[in-house]
Amino acid sequence: MSTTARVKEILGWYESDNPGTKANLARFLNQGKLAGTGKLVILPVDQGFEHGPARSFAANPAAYDPHYHFKLAIDAGLSGYAAPLGMLEAGADTFAGQIPLILKMNSSNSLAVQKDQAITASIDDALRLGASAIGFTIYPSSDYQFEQFEEIAELSREAKAAGLAVVIWSYPRGPELDKPGETAVDICAYAAHIAALLGAHIIKVKPPTEHLSLPAAKKVYEEQKIDISSLSARVRHVVQSSFDGRRIVIFSGGEATDTDGLINTIEGLADGGAFGSIIGRNTFQRPREEALQLLDQIVTIFKDHA
Image (tube, rainbow, N blue to C red; front, side):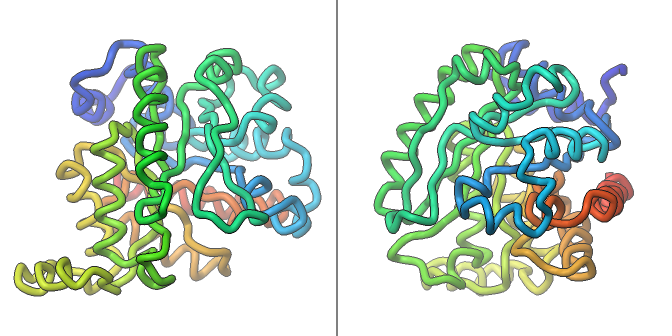
């Protein structure tokens, strides 16, 4: 397909990148049902690493098979598929070229207590598997945050030199934040801005709540009368915090929820100018046909706001 004006505009924001990286970023923007709109819906399946197999897949046993997720993302007309090394290796040949891939480069697990992640793949792995991007999680506020920043800075330089795009999951957590603080609007905006400063092409954060966590930030929000009264207003602020919307910011679907709750969240994200969503358990834990119907609803919402 020919590149739309919107996709050309977005690619123009990444002024330092080589043609290879821009071509890979364009693959996501020109893929599936949202092709050309500037919106993205991506399927991430790293939950087996993070939470364990039963917690991730027992609700829909077909999802134990790595091929299931490739097929789901392709048949749903999604923009991309993200997974750790082993999951991509299990289907990279069968589904080569059918959907842009994100190789998740680091992972944690529920057996650990520290807020850190291990690097589990390499740039060579991403190239070998035909991935278009690498993915990496950072935990702003954790005791390991600065080491993680240094790791993704190095991996990002290597990835961009090889023509790959960079996706950063920015999830604040650590001893200075309580649970409400992890999704507070000031913290989510800060996390998105940090990811942009670290060189991310695509930034993933959680939907922000109305809570304000940092006293110094709360004072500014109140003095400047920053609107955080609705999800759409908070999303708009997070996007603004990512270089005034010159970086692609996509949001998770939140915790596992019912269909109405999820759709309400997606509508709030779309109303606020989110570039899309990266949504896993809320789809692949459902029966396949139900998941396809739900993903079609989500894609349609973002397409209507393009």
